[in-house]
Length: 146
Image (tube, rainbow, N blue to C red; front, side):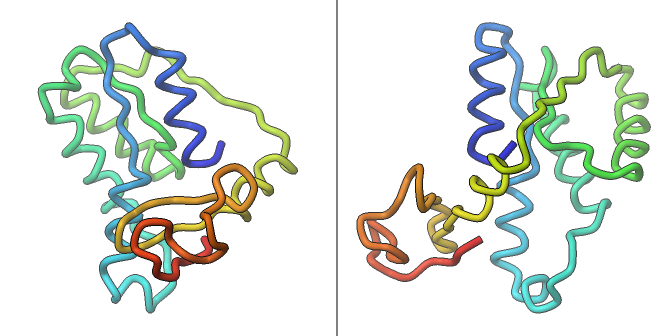
């Protein structure tokens, strides 16, 4: 599911369960967009960085009663490191959800996404367009098409 849809679906599904939604999307996006070294290289963020983000998030007291991992793990290495991390905490994964979405819907959601990098505001060409195409509604500056 696209970034904006997954957290909303998770919040709707798990409202009242007193669990925390833990996502790597915003921290990884912030890291890549605001560290020119990664932006220039055009490479994927390492598994160690992503696992570190999750590890730090799970240390927070708010995660002690439960948490939902959004979009993680994405690789076998991340899954193995997650198992190790949870084993150290004495925690086990008790449920996994897999949302099946038609590829055409995903393509439309992903290719229409626009991001204003300095503020993090996101737009979508069809579902949440800016008032002026290509221009941020608040700062009136150009933004990236992601």
